[in-house]
Length: 381
Image: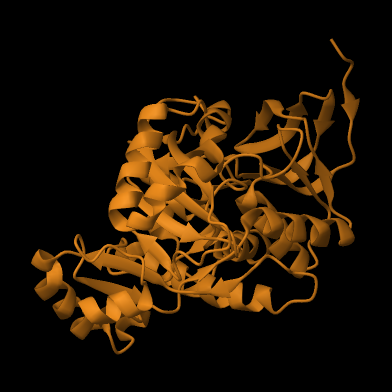
């Protein structure tokens, strides 16, 4: 067993080197709160879902939980700011989202667009009839779809590149990023974490601890005595070489799977929800299912099955009630949680980073986070 060494005291220890943990560190740095260490169990940052996703940055959709709308709206603004910041090149582009509908859904879609089409509650969307949909997306199936809802402000980006930009900024601020090192234990005294033990033999002394460990947040929080119901949900991604063909212009969002062009010559097919623990093996049944659904949305994909560049499976952190877990528990005075974002990790990273940094530095946040409190899962809360 390696002997333990004491580490200099840190103002904040962030557990988790995915896009959420990096965003929290970045926004702490913007407040000149820089005596921070971020620790990641993997050998590199953004290894899991943070670095393996299609890069969709959704705005407010009528299908989303209303509790999320303020977070999504603020995150849109922050992404625009990041995209205009020096040193932040992460392929940000506003290409919109298409939610295609069948003939049976036309009336419902039209009513939805009338209700929210004038930026009601921060939503921007348009109804597209069959002809408008085909002009917007020439390769979409007009046999399956006869209309769509179109969200023009939705964007895309590369989360892996964003993670690199965030990490670079943090290092320039003097923060420490440690990879290939996990947390092995906590020492708690009078409702505060006073020591953190790591797998590389160090004992850290943090003023504040942030748990942003994605699907692993449950085991970390359990060691703190506040077990959070966060579980890994597996999704699949297939990257296809289109040979330079612009197959889709927008994020095509189906009920379970989606089609997105994330470069000049590559399309991503993705989605699915499997509760299979921490298994990241590719499931050929899900790959076939994704192909079938994608081809039914964009039939031209049928001739591109031999052009697959890669397939992968990633784990997304899902809280039992479907909402992120953000904030501090009454059981621990100096621990903040940021997990359970599920499919919205990339989309909500900036607002999560900003709000958690506000809680740490100011003791309050500009958006009410009570709906996302970790204490909502405590039986005696």
